[in-house]
Amino acid sequence: MGMGWPAGGIIEPQPPAVQIGLDSGLMAGPPVEEVRRTLADLTGLFSDPAALARLPKDRLVYRVQSWSPVSEGTEGGLVYGVTVIEPGDVGGEYHMTKGHFHARREAAEFYWCYHGQGLLLMMDERRRCRVERMVPGSLHYIPGGTAHRTVNVGDTPLSFGACWPTTAGHDYAAIAQRGFSVRVFRTGDGPRVAEAG
Ligand code: M6P
Ligand code: ZN
Image 1 (spheres, rainbow, N blue to C red):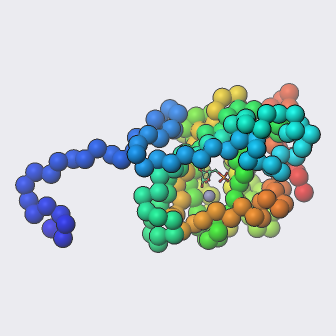
Image 2 (image 1 turned 45 degrees about the horizontal axis):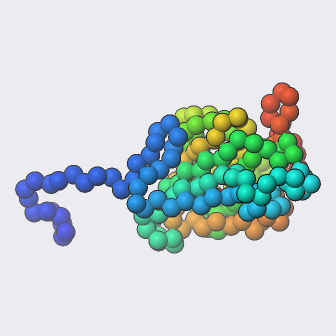
Image 3 (image 1 turned 90 degrees about the vertical axis):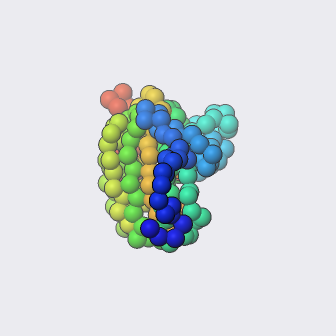
């Protein structure tokens, strides 16, 4: 036995620090933090500013719960998070996350879907985009050097889990300036992924 481990005898199992609701993906437990993104936080994200101006600024678009067992930047650590995007659109463009590159470009990430219907947009630094469907149980690998954004194309909340290195960091600047090279709109036939330049 190493230092700090019992030398023998009975070990009492401890309760987990966090529980995940396997249907909703929502997390519960003391270390869980939550960030909410309303329309007021998402200025410039959607393509139709006039449509945005007609909507209540306090409309919740998505929230992110996370657990960082070690502090940001710690080598070798992992962060776990769940994002829940409410159904809806702004001028026909579906609710979506801001999207980001990782500050440390080589850092990859896993996403998986708990609930709802979504699209995962993945864009490399040359602005080439790939799009994967998210359905309950789908698992998605986001390689290094790839910006990622999720879009709720269903009429229920889209909930997905994520796991990324503690050292990854979020780089929002490139996306804030130029957005993604595709946008996703509601049509009578379902979602349409359109080139945005
Ligand atoms: C996932 C992870 C998080 C991210 C969140 C929302 O849970 O990738 O790191 O913060 O989605 O995405 P964004 O930060 O781009 O709005
Ligand atoms: Zn990420």
